[in-house]
Amino acid sequence: MNYFRTAGLMAVLIVLFALVGSFLGGTNGMLIAFGVAVVMNAGSYWFSDKVVLKMYGAEIVERADAPDLYDAVDRLRQRADLPMPRVAVIPSDQPNAFATGRNPQHAVVAVTSGIQRMLSQDELEGVIAHELAHVKNRDILTSSIAATMAAAITMLARFGLFFGGGRDRNLFATLAMLIVAPLAAFLIQAAISRSREYAADRGGAEICGRPRALAGALEKLDAGARQVPMNHSDQTSDATAHMFIVNPFSGGMSGVRRLFSTHPATEERVRLLEEMT
Image (cartoon, rainbow, N blue to C red; front, side):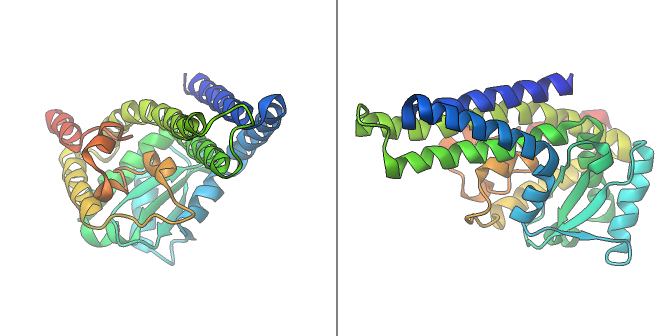
């Protein structure tokens, strides 16, 4: 099922990419954008994990570098019956985590340095189990492709701000396209992310065996993301927000933007986990 979902996502994002190209450059623009989208999808399949890790400055660590973290991942992946993923640490004070990679054999579980300081061992293991559930459900390829392609659509639409939308397009139409294209890509991410977060919460609770620990971790992470929002930069953007266990940019979100959040409400996630206990 996840293979079909990923293929469908790739197809929709290619179409969006081509439509933006058509608006900006007519038929030639559409053909060029279509070709670029196909190449980017292929690149996303093979290299999206490296791209996302580089965006956040994540460093792969071995057991000697972080024995407690590495052993926790190793212990939980055995309970989940998964190959050992690579482990990465993101140099950020915000408590957060994500998983990436094209399949369980090439997965990466990344955690911030902030999460290791904030959470208890049980809570941290709940978060790791959540990310391993994403790996087991094969969500990681879908989310990685969505991140890279949505970012590309956004950049292409912004590119049109400087070069216009063709001689027969007025400024209003160009600005509308600059808003609609990134929003469409963002809504695709949101539709995928909300359902898979619930599934990963349940799967993670089953892997670690402590739903309440994961619930407590989510409450702390949600508060931490608001207090210490991850900094926006040229490399990071909302296009990758859906990959994290909680939205890393929620600290700067207005009420309207929260309506389009890629993550379900933390209160609802906690309530469902409490029911499991």
